[in-house]
Length: 119
Image (cartoon, rainbow, N blue to C red; front, side, top):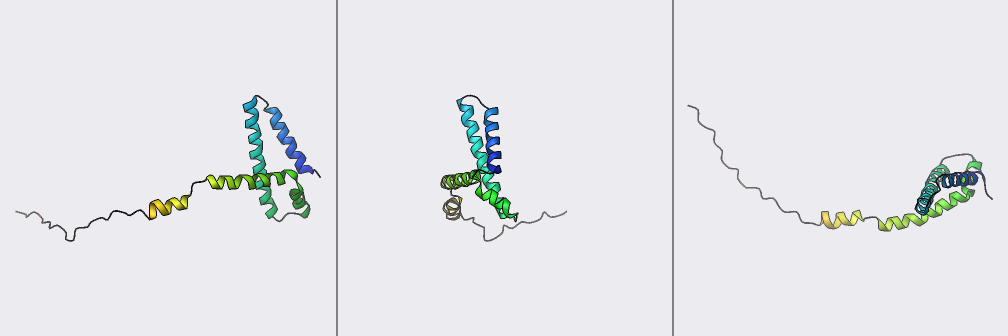
């Protein structure tokens, strides 16, 4: 069943898309912005579900279709981004830690320095 949160999100998304209607590229850009907004709604709702709120507020968030859709988007996109991220740990272990550093040779004795004599 659609609740008030779903109606608000539908209204905001439609208002944004209709206000910024344009060519094909502009429409694709606007749809990507709406998807990013849905991901942001999912992140915010996950934090709100951890906050001790009244039971109806938790039920409203859990039963919302757009919150479920945003969770699905996050679960789909996150592993993809994680696979494409550079492996920093591997880079540090292979390139920085295992690379032999050249040894600096320190002379065993210091050169003798003498002060000039006063006349």
